[in-house]
Length: 185
Image (cartoon, rainbow, N blue to C red; front, side, top):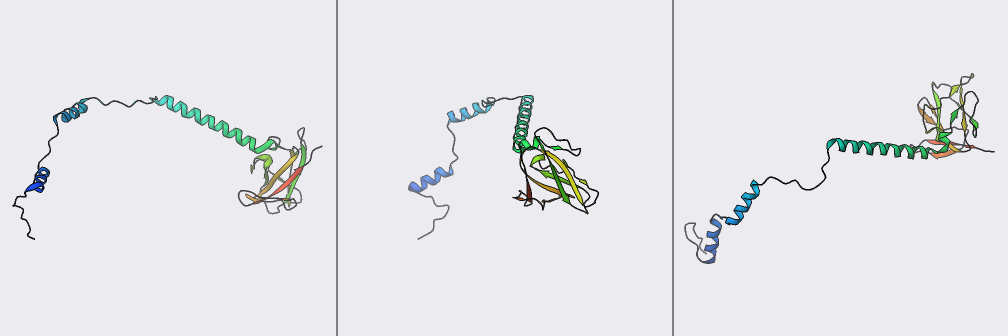
């Protein structure tokens, strides 16, 4: 088989195809005119919503407020009626429908002790306990409506269960909680 040189001309269909590929294509006149007219026309915005920035900001604020209100309502309901009925009654007074419940823990070296539970939304500063004259025991009296409550003590920032009460299982953080049952009449 002999190799063809570049200067030799191809014949037949192969030669025609080669010449067509080498020629520069020229677009049809109608197509070229349509493209030029389209380029000169102003751009048309697609149909859709047109919102002013102030309206968009107001809508976002309304959604945020609505979401916050719904979240507050859900959290308040999840805390249960016991959370709304709490009264830390250091002076011995208890609201109507509540019973006084005394919580005590021995923590001789502690600086700050409080109680957290279902009845106060697990707020570590909501119900501080006071040290008794023996210097070892901390206590607080809480008015609670009848029901079952899980709780724990916060001793210098660390959660600990009440060793004198039944265990309710562990919370979401792996810390065992205690249980108190408040009876009604």
